[in-house]
Image (cartoon, rainbow, N blue to C red; front, side, top):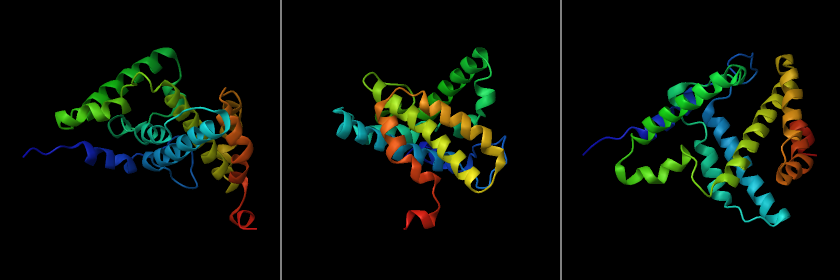
Length: 195
């Protein structure tokens, strides 16, 4: 019987820290981040279905989000200012992510590869769900900035303003609905939540 490394590698997501260029009050790894993005992607899909008559597959959105940063177990987490410094770096990094995704897929039995490939290569028909995942990824970054600034970490003040502006520019009614109805709670303390 052959041994396959895919799930052991996915499990290593907990070892890859995010926000490496900034002082963090609370560390966040890509496993935690991916869980948050999955919860938010699912929520955005449910909001779209209930409020805007969409027909999103909320469970699939959550699954795409769970794996959206998995290639970082091979590449590490490239800080955003570096990754998007210019088009050359951005394009090279996308190619590196593609190669990392192929390496991970090749750690599965042949009969499983087609089930996991859409998490690493965008599949036709998932375009709208990937928009939700990308939006959820940005909301997750905003939530991290909110959490850090609420603890007095001034390191995240500019990032907070920047993320708030990025969220305002997302042209999805699901995001606007989430921000109006659910995001304010992230600015509250535990005591304020339980009143």
